[in-house]
Length: 429
Image (spheres, rainbow, N blue to C red):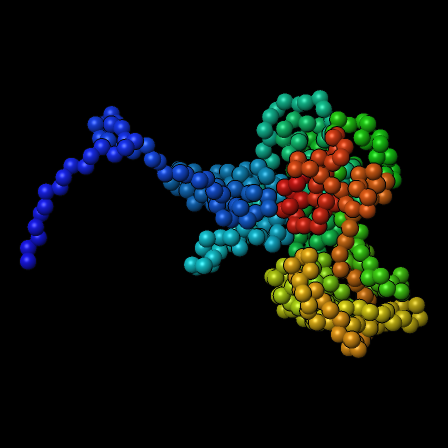
């Protein structure tokens, strides 16, 4: 049967249409365009323009650039929000890759390695951090703490023409980047060079100057036009068990600080590390490098461990043993030192406020683990000595949506607000 062509009747005028300049009737209806960030950028706590960085490199030949020019452009895009691309390319757990559209096709792009490459290339070729103005403003800004939040704040202010002075309690700047991350993960020379670029913008860093101890906080507040507080959370939390003051017991941050500062620590043959976060994993892997047999004691299961998965795998590959569902109950001392830890066996119950299942003791089930050194890496908190004014009762520092504290002249960011990633601290700075 052949096709029969039927004459089409002309459509009547659609209500709401108008005749355009071409004489064709058009509808007032238009598509709604909803701008959204690329998934990788939305997954980055610092909002890094990842798509633009990748395009800068990918379009090198199309744009008639040399690769050196494209790498410089990519670095400048990264540096809009982050003066530490070589650092973050090494230590950030790269949540951007978890959001990558290609993860379900052929695997997420290796974004953190690209960032590391660009950061290292910039250091090797002495790329300066980009300034936004050559003007200098009269206002003086004080930054308390030379960690990632404080240095990020100093950088963003300096590149905008403000005079910034950073007060640092430790002998060198860097905060947890220097004293809390092992050098096998973050080489000291990389950190030194990225900090020096910030100093080159005119930022003054006064080390060995603890605000609240060496200089009153009130003096800083009254002398400067604005203050940013980024003291971090260097103070390790204790287990709360008798005998924890023994000389062979350390908190995780204390242990890493001593090792990174060059102190020689004899950890003995057996090391126990309590905790399941990044600090616990770092302490365990450092102890392994010091020649010890290392066991991590964690009160939940591997699924609930907050540490970076790659670091957990790395620890296991290096011979670190992880025992799950155990919690320290008693420290057993001999000659003034902890020689063993009695642990309560646990099982998982209902989720707690963190969303992880709560560990519940199994009555009558205990185990004993021997040790020469015990490292408690369960959590950490800020040291508010001399800065109690900034606290809200017994809580940490509270800020509004602009990171302003209850004092309109004082701002704050970083781990002294809440423990988080390095990239979060950089963003808040």
